[in-house]
Image (cartoon, rainbow, N blue to C red; front, side):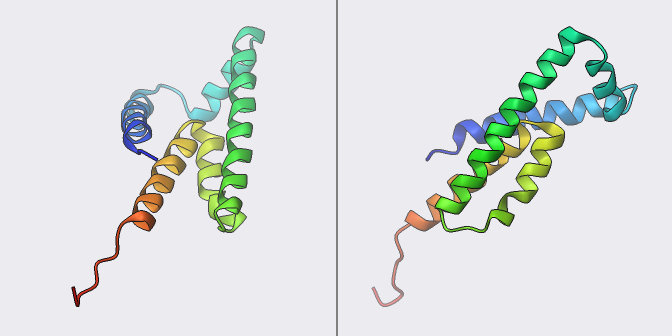
Length: 111
């Protein structure tokens, strides 16, 4: 799996998120509360977290299918709970790097 797309998205969105958080006039919790105070913005937040939940389930099942502990996805799930797309994007990048490392040919020093 190519890591170019998730890595690009992670860097771009992560950088944008850090920039916005540094300039924010309210805390992340206050922002979330204000979003949930109106039905139109609450609908978007609920929709986003439904998708985040599906991504979390996928990450957990994917890790188990790859022989990893379910606990190995906890950091990604925590990131997903706070920043939604950062967790799955980071998971895809790390998974791609692991796949690349696994499929790299082993060169014997005797060759």
